[in-house]
Image (tube, rainbow, N blue to C red; front, top):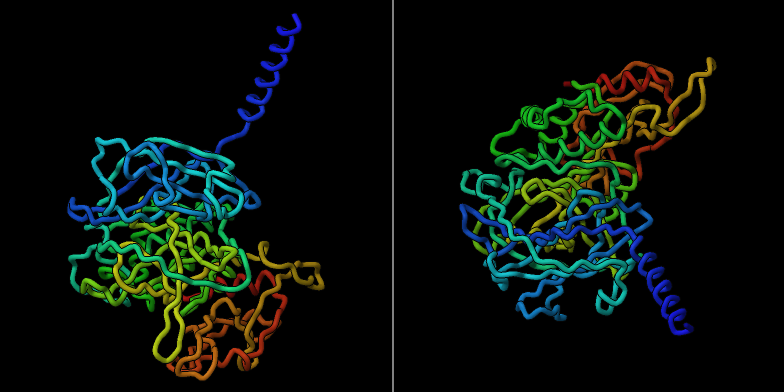
Length: 478
C-alpha cells in the first residue's frame, strides 16, 4: 500500500510539473521556411531562413533567436551548423523574421528532408544557444523559392546609385563589423507596420506606403488613405515622379505633396549620411523611417544602383556589433535582419554600410526619411491661451525673426561647409509667435552651409495654438 501511495504521489508530482510547463505559451511556430532567391528560375546561391511567430511579446520581453540547419543530414546539429546566432527577434503574432543565408553549401533538393532547430533566449548566449533556451522548435524545413528578376528590374537600363530601384541579384553574404561603445541598444517601431510586396523597381513608394499605413492606422485615420494598397503605391509613384525608380531629390517632395492632399498631419525630415544614433533616435521618437541605400563597387561589374526599405528596428549588442531590421519589399514577407558596418572615404568621412545579401559590393546608407505625426493632441502640451485653449509645444529654428518647425530641416554633416549645418529645400513657418500668417523661404546655400551652421542657428521651444498648427499643416504646397 505504501509503495502504491508513493507511486501515486510521484505520478501527481510529475503530472503537476508537466501541467506547469505545458501551460507555458509558445511564441514560435513550426512552419520554418528555407527560401531560395532565383532570377528567371535560376538559383542565385542565397536566400533566407524564415522563422514564424504565433504570439506577441511586449517590448520588455526581449528575445534573441539562434537557428541551426542539419546541413550534413546526420540528425544532429553541430557547432558549425548554427547559421543564426543571438539575433534580436521581432516577435508578433502571424509574423516572420528572415535571416540571410548563403545556400551554396546547402543541398536544395526539396525531396530530401532537412531539419532545422530554432532557439529563443532572454539574452545573448556565449555558450551553446540550447543551454539557456526559453523555447526550442525542431522541425523539418519547408522549401520555397522567391523570384526576383521582374521585381528588381535588373535588365532595365539606366541604373544609378541615385536611382532607388533595387540591385541586380548577385548574392553576397559578407558580415560587416561595426563595434561601438555604450552597450546593448534595442530600438524599434512597435506599431503595426505592413510589409507590402513591390512591383518592378518601386521600392521607395512601397516603403513609404508601409509607413503611411502604419502612422494613419496608429492614429485612427486610415480612412484618409486610398483603401486599396495598389492605389496608394501608384499615387505615391506619381507624386515621387517614378521613372524606372525614384531619386531621393523627389522622395520628400512627393511625400509632402501626398500627405498635404490627404490632409495628414505628417512632417518628414531627411537626414543625409545618418549615423546609427540617428536611426535609434528616429525610432525612439515614434518616427516611421525609410532607409535609403546606394549600392556601389560591385565585384562582378554590375551597374551601381540603389534600394529603399522600411526600417522597423535597430540593435546593438553588448559587444557593440550593430544590425537593423527592415521590411524589404523585394524579399519574402517578414522582418529581415541585416548587419551593419562602417566605410571610410580617403578623406576620412565615415558612412554607415549595410550587409545586403543581393549585392556583391558596398552598400552605403545615404539617407533616412523620418516622418512624425504632428497633430496637436499628440504633441507635447504647452500652456493655454487666455480663453483656456490648450496649446502645443514645438521645436523651431529662428531664422530672420520668424519661426520654422525644426522637423522640416535635415542636418548635413561637414562637407563644403566647415561644420554640421541645416538644409531643407523650401521650408514654412510662422511670421512671429502670435501670427497665423505662414511664410516660406528657400535654402539660401544648397551647396554650402544651407540655412546655417547647427551651432549658430537659434533653436527654441514655442507654444502654438490649434489655428497656427492647422495653418502650418495645410500650407505645405502640393
